[in-house]
Length: 300
Image (cartoon, rainbow, N blue to C red):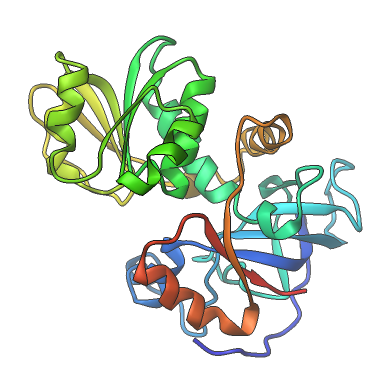
């Protein structure tokens, strides 16, 4: 990873330019750096700019942008790093106006930058499951960013949540709203079945345990996978991979997440803030594991 000077981007029709103050560091950024997303960019040449989560201030409005957004407004945005302009690790980014919403009131930009990608992934997972209020949902990786948001949103949707946690994270996961917490690890399916003998209707696999968690599901249940694992299916179980890029321009859903932060339904968690020039160190720390909350790069 290197610091580069690139041409100043200009907002086109339906786009806004944001002076970035903070960009969250997510696992998908590490996948881009290490080559895991190369298949999605067959015609692209370096440099590649990582980052899907940005917070900053609008400094240019493109033609056709309505008055929902204004110059000087603090905002948060989802950024498609596989596009020709690259991602959020930049002093200025240009994104579709539909991917931009006001920053949550009363929240600093570093914390605001951690919201959209992970919370929107959780929202998409829950919407794909479409479980009725009162149903039981299981979440693995519940102490992490996507898993934590899944628990908080599921509780708000009226679901009963069984979540996993390491001993040090049990209280954290209970604060998110899990009704039951089981030990993290390879025995999670057995422990979920002990609480839900018929199996759960849906499971969000935030820890990417794939085949290990399928026994926790009821016949005909649905497993949500976050890294594209497609199956195999058994006992009528559906495996549904979800990709947040499919909903990056769902402005109403993005803005709903912002309002939930303001109302206290969703919580923001920052592990540390590093100068943007230390992006490589942020990636090393993320890959080392053990973080609670997101690392954030400071572009102020």
